[in-house]
Length: 207
Image (cartoon, rainbow, N blue to C red; front, side, top):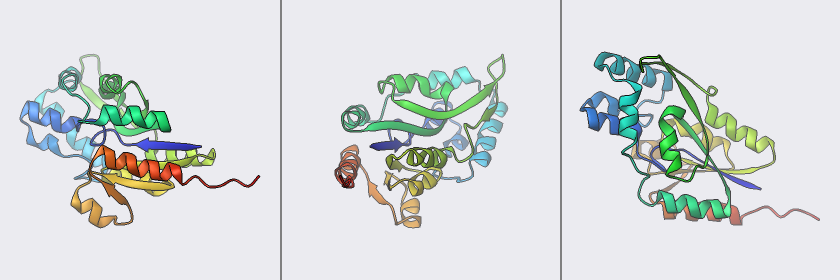
């Protein structure tokens, strides 16, 4: 049995922090895991800015409510789910992702959780587990599943390495050059084609 594991932001939906940056005019919030590979360092940077600017969870959720899936992502996930099981592995937070998941017909999502105070201040975050994307893929493989994974950022690399096949999707040139072992795609049709090739290469089981 096959399973497809996808990153969320940059693959199916816009980068949430970039959207917040554009709404608030705070350029520093544009940094993502494409730019900083150390997730703790990146989140500490973000939370410091939110405190400095007085930005609360509701302010971010208001921005998220205006976002739509990337062009073609909805049809892509519908076609994919007709052919394979799909799990979204993301470093986003459940408080951010819920409305976007509804717009994608609620695929299974594993992500992290924000620590939010009563006044809406984001005080911190709780990881589902350290390097959770890789560990999820390894767990799926331990159950006998063949896993295809795709993502666009540094925090997806360990997931792609753990899968039977990994593919970069619209990744920056710097990441493509650093990890040439992965095939690449720039459109959802190209990604679906790569997945279908993986699905068609099912190993023959002896009778």
